[in-house]
Length: 84
Image (cartoon, rainbow, N blue to C red; front, side, top):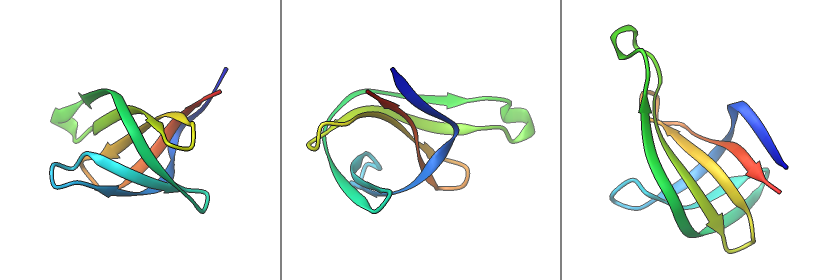
């Protein structure tokens, strides 16, 4: 079972020089990233200014398996999916 936030739930992310996330804060708790298991980019409707995002499926040292994304148009980060 998973929980999905179609529009994302805002998070704060500390990223490395290559913009890869190192840790994120969600609902007042900071989660260190243990491993990124998949990374991909999505660009839709680019001719109309659509979404341009970098997605990361990752595990944390606290035991979470999540999908987060970086909105490359606006710079914000969001948690989109939490796997149970």
